[in-house]
Image 1: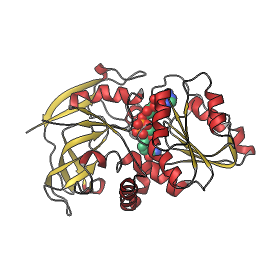
Image 2: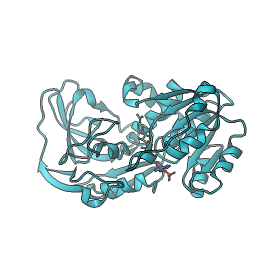
Image 3: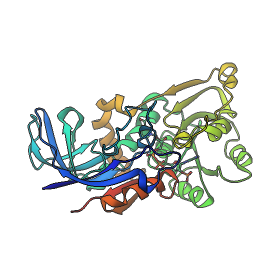
Image 4: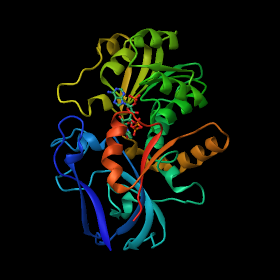
Length: 331
Ligand SMILES: NC(=O)c1ccc[n+]([C@@H]2O[C@H](COP(=O)([O-])OP(=O)(O)OC[C@H]3O[C@@H](n4cnc5c(N)ncnc54)[C@H](OP(=O)(O)O)[C@@H]3O)[C@@H](O)[C@H]2O)c1
C-alpha cells in the first residue's frame, strides 16, 4: 500500500498558493512501540497550520519543508503496537494532510461512529467545538444577561461559542464578514450578526451591544479586536482563542489600545484547548445532548479528495465556508 501526502514545498509569503504544497506518494508509516497507524477518512482543516508554515512560529513547532501539513483527522486503526487500540478501532488523531498517519497512543482518542457519523467527530464533536466549549464553560462562562461577542462567528469555533453563550442565558453577538453570514449566525440563535466588512461596522456593533460587552471570545485579532476592546465593560473578560487576521500578515500586526484593560480592570486570557483534554468525555456527552435537544448545530463544509486540501485551506482562511471545513479522503 502507498501513502499519499500533501507536504510543504515552500514557506508561503502571505496567503499560501498552490505551489507552496506538493502532493507526494510515500511508503506507509511504520508502526512503532506505543503507536498506531490509521487510515484517515476525513481531515479537519485547522487555521493554526498557517502560522506553523512560517520558519518560526509563535503558535507551535513549525512544519519542516517536506513534512505533511498539520491537521486533525478521523479514521480507522489498521495496525497497533499500543495497548488499548486494535485494528478496526475508530479514532481521532492529529493526522496531517495524508491518507495514512502514525500516531502515538497518547495523542489518539477512540471515537464511536455509532453515536455520531464520522464527520461530526471533526465538527460538532471536534477540536474547534471543544475549544469553544472550554472557553464558554470553563474559562469565561458568561452569566445570564451578559453580552458575549464572538468573532469569526460563522466558522467552526465561533458558531459553537455563540450558541453555548446563549445556552448560558447570555446575549450572543457574532462578528462575521458579510450580510449573508449575519443572517446565518442569527439562524443559529445569535441575537445579532455584525458585519466587520461593512462601512458602518462600528455603528452595527454599538447597536448590537447597547450595554457594552462583558465577554469577548476572540478568534480574529487586529482591527476587529480593537473595535470590541473599545466597548468592553468594567471587569470584562477577553478570551484570546486565535488571531486569524494575522496569520497571513507580512507586516507587523495591528491590535487594540490596551489602556482600556488597565482602567476597566479587564481580564485577558489566552488558551489552548489541547491543555484541557480531560474534559473531552464531558464535552461529547453535553454536545450530543444539546444537539439532540435542537440547541446546538454545526454545519460541515466538505470537499472530496486529498488534492483539494490546499484550495480548501485557502477558502478556510478567506472565510469561503460555513461551519467546519473538512476534506473527505478516498482511495
Ligand atoms: N486556542 C485554541 O486551542 C484553538 C483551537 C482551534 C482553533 N483556534 C482558533 O480559532 C479561530 C477559528 O478557527 P476555526 O477553525 O474555527 O476557523 P473558522 O472560523 O471556521 O474559519 C476562519 C474564519 O476566520 C474569518 N477570518 C479570516 N480572516 C479574517 C480577517 N482578516 N478578519 C476577520 N475574520 C477573518 C473568516 O470568516 P469571515 O468570512 O467572517 O471573515 C473564516 O470563517 C482561529 O483563530 C484558530 O486559530 C484556536
